[in-house]
Length: 278
Image 1 (tube, rainbow, N blue to C red):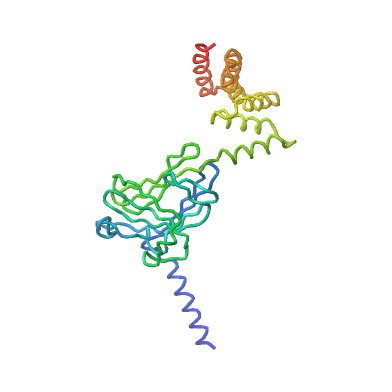
Image 2 (cartoon, rainbow, N blue to C red):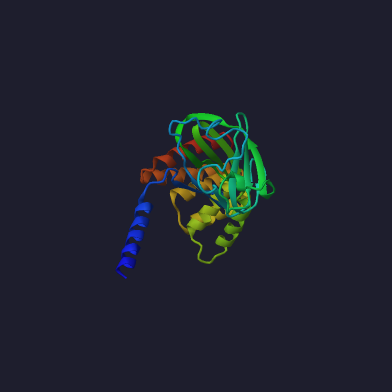
């Protein structure tokens, strides 16, 4: 019995020690909302350690697991466009075929893989090609999601002096309009709900009449310098420049009282712009 307990204690201790050791290729995660779509990437991050990476450690023109250990996984909760082609909502293994002048990006439906040899090409759901560029030296393989602009972003792979930008987009317009319709019809909707709805429509230049309606409802419920500015923008989009100038003047005065210089400047710029259009 004592021997059994001693073995169990030693085995348990060994496990703890092993778990505490740093990994040569530690796990990494990236999570980003693009439009209204959540994009998640899980991968392992090998380091160069003085080695020549692409063309040697990672051969050209051969499929690569895009990291180390388990295959890199990308998960999206709604459909997106990748380099102009549709990738349906779901979870995928992310493979790449590096090349000197072109990289091939493979999204494979089998997410229980380990290494390049397990991949079946017929299980690729989407394959796109992108051109690599150069970057500052990156010691550890890195995946980021950046260049966010409305519904667009760039999934970027970086290692050594190679950067591979993959353009993705997730059109949020349809879903956002549905969310707006639901929100503004809620009896509990306050001035912020109407402002946010108006601002989305104004920024995307969608349905100017509805934008003006919601902006006015926001101001009617509670007047703030920022929803007054949005009302001015909506008025201008509807061709009501005289009203827009008057509203912007009020917004600017309110912003001055609370020393919010950004809105003072924005209103001044818009008043100058609209004064030429009356």
